[in-house]
Image (cartoon, rainbow, N blue to C red; front, side):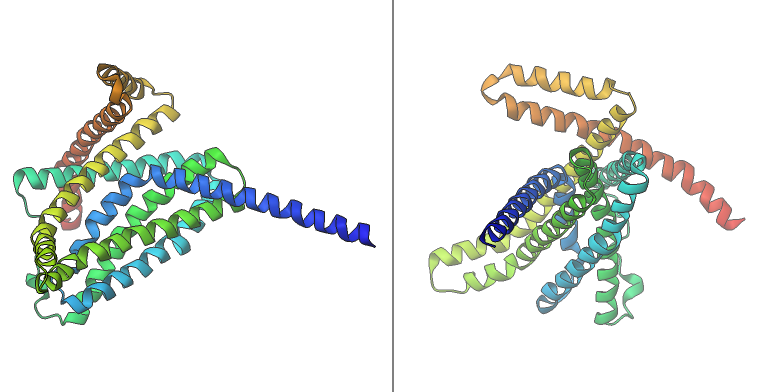
Length: 321
């Protein structure tokens, strides 16, 4: 009897060790996949604050909370099942979908660059037609728009995660756990950061009204610095879209035997790293990211031209005809 009990306890310990190892493996792979999706995460954090502009301070956090719930719904109820189905029945489709997402990122990044260079207003901020809407309707519209944008960016995050996980493990349940961990973790990080960014100026106003000169200085710094920080975040987000999108396309081409772009970037990065060996790793990464970003911008500009001067006119003719 005692031997049977000891054997049972030994089995339980063995199972616990296996479970712990699986959890460690899941955490490690989730961290690796999250790091690869960092560029899209930065862009997600850069895009979201604009959806709370124009609302009263008491509605900012509730709006962010609603967008967060929508983002979790996108990742866990729509994208995670779709990703797992792809992994089971059409793993060959992962790379093309990932490249399609990379192409979209290049297109979006190129459009932002053109808007900044040409000072072109896309009309997204125009509220001429919404003057008759009440605050509730306007808030609902903004939340829906933010959740739609999040669906695209979250789709790219989950595709990057799936491509990383599929190369590391064939376990269906481990893939599911890692996708869920990455989806939840990135959502909390992104929208937690957005909440801090959005409320920083309010905190600054409170600090500026205190009696402490130090706190007043910090408060004024927050109030005056947040607009500049948001502009910087927008620039970083655009750069991230281009380097991530370009990098995805380069790696996707390598999967189909087109290695020249990847070899060219790797050679250029290695050459840059040799110029200053003390910071070779940093120079290698900067050169790789910069080259991928330039390539992404070139591809994105091509897509913008094709859409505006090819696809859009043809679509307009079909609508009229």
